[in-house]
Structure formats: C-alpha cells, structure tokens
Image (cartoon, rainbow, N blue to C red; front, side, top):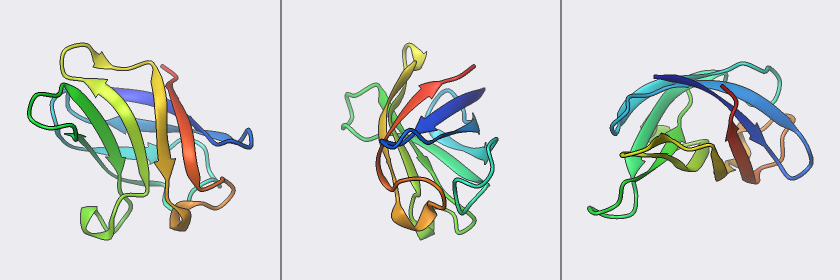
Length: 113
C-alpha cells in the first residue's frame, strides 16, 4: 500500500516521500516527491518489528542505492502497527551522509495522504 509521508527537521525544513511497503514486514520501495533535501531520491523501504517477538509496532527503514548492506539513511519510528496499520505520525532519525538541505539527526514525520 502506498502512502505519502512528510518528514521534517528541527529547523522547519520538510519534504515529502512516497512509501510503498506491504502491510506485514517486508521490503518495498520509496521515492522522494520533493527534490534537493536528500542525497538519494529512491530506494528500498523495509518495515520490521524491532521490539521483540510480542510487539506489533513496526519501524520503517529507508535505504538508498546500496540497499540494506549500505545501512539505512532514514528511520521512521512506530511507522505502523500490525493490527491498526500506518500511524498518523511519529519521530525518527536521518543519517548525516544522506542530507543535502536538511538537518541530520532527530526528525518528525506525519502521514500526508
């Protein structure tokens, strides 16, 4: 299922991405809808449960052209719940090597559909 997500930093910068990832954990894809903020404009999206076997909370990791072996560039915490689906918003992180006109570190995100 495809969702549009707005990502913002602490300095008031924001951009939109399109995320297409399955309802359950697995791989999908993402692409930037706003240019100039990130080094990468598309790549792999992977939702995974990080809180142990009993959690229903999924974190979304966005990878660039190097894929998962190169490490994630954006992490959207509590992106979805296995029971309720995609959450309305949350927090996360963006890695320094990924930013162009954006502040690295802590971010917030919100569903923009």
